[in-house]
Length: 605
Image (cartoon, rainbow, N blue to C red; front, side):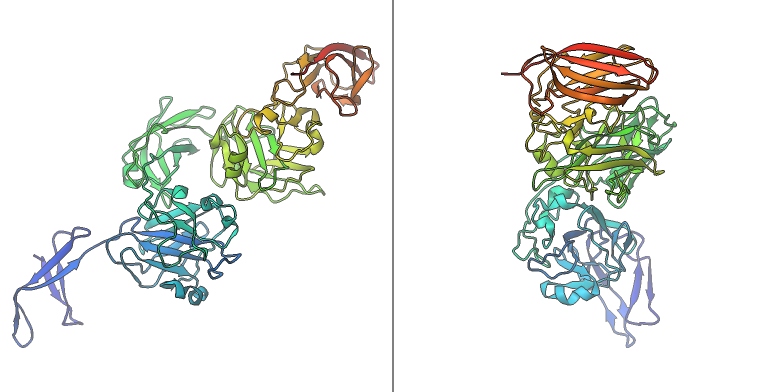
């Protein structure tokens, strides 16, 4: 029974009832009225009315289909739009709901009763006449701009609570042609709203989409995969933010366990971060120390489908240190991809610092030497630990198809990439103060000379500790490695073993120049007690005849190396056999040193 009943003074036909206990959400209720009299004295007894009470829950209204790139037109109007679907069993008034992206939000939606399992299109006012023939259409002010890739969109109710969010990119189309425009992205299973890319694909309808109708790819696509911990970041010494591969149940996350190693202990003040709920922030009981790598272990979290986290529940974390010169280096570059593929740029953290990709940038240089458009390595904070690789590309799927990617977590899809010309160009890495951390000016002539077709062949750095812009420190990725090694150690990696003071060494003393990734070249390493020498380096055959002039009157430092690839001056393979490296060094003070070292060229048969 109600605890109070108040007649509405302005409208005598209304009586407002208040109850001691809240209505159960989603309940079907019956109200029975006795003893109510009208002004003539007539009494109403045993009158009943049925009604339902429902407060919409998260994921009751979902983003169901989106047209982010309507051009070139396939069959639908040239307009951006978003389709909303009611996945609940109740009619919901979406008045006051808004569409959001990082740069702002739309105006509120007008009053509209969205019935169970039905759809409505939302667009700008000018697009309503174009879309209305396809189904119910609502205009909204400040309809958000929908970039073609790399964007998060979310829907909020009238109170600002997040109802659903998606973070789409070009890979969601799973079709390179349709990703060029004119086709919508459709959700496969509306009952599985949090699965991300695994629950979306390009429409298969000949018109390019299915506005106002059941999606063309609709099917059962139940989420049975456990959520995974992807990465961790510490914005300060007592706060850690974890990133997961899919949205979490925010209420379960608040009571989960987040343990930090090295005696730090369990986290507190736990919050799942809107709008995507793929991140959890918590406080640590003790401060993290700079230079220390910690391990975070998560238990007790579930995704929005109820799947509990499995064994992919640990991540490294630490306090990031600003990058200085040559902390992060250009380690490998693919600048001449095969047709229908894309470039990639591999970076390597050769320092003992923990670096934040979110505070680093990359670009190129024009032919006049000016820096190009400066792009972030990552739109969000992301740690690069000592000895880790970081590979940037515009299409990660194409790189995975062409090359072996041993560490997929190091392969990062960038919304855009600088232009890296096929003949020669520049790749520049900068920190957040604008200081150049590393800069490579590459040349196609640095490739192994006997490779006739250089399309799809990456250029690899040989020694990360040697100068970047030295041609002898770069060569083609080995054929045995698929001509590229994104995300792991270069196929042509060779560390300078260090020649004794005042000497040269040839490493290895026997090599086979066949680009198979095993001892394809030899390094002639030198080390002197002082800089300022000029070097002449010649390769002689067994009869003492010059076959290759490696260097002529080249100014050198106190230490370094030159590379011989087993070719003669005509860029032809030398015959198998023994050769001599004749190394002559002199300075302006009249000091002169000469060395002869044997080297053998072998061949596999």
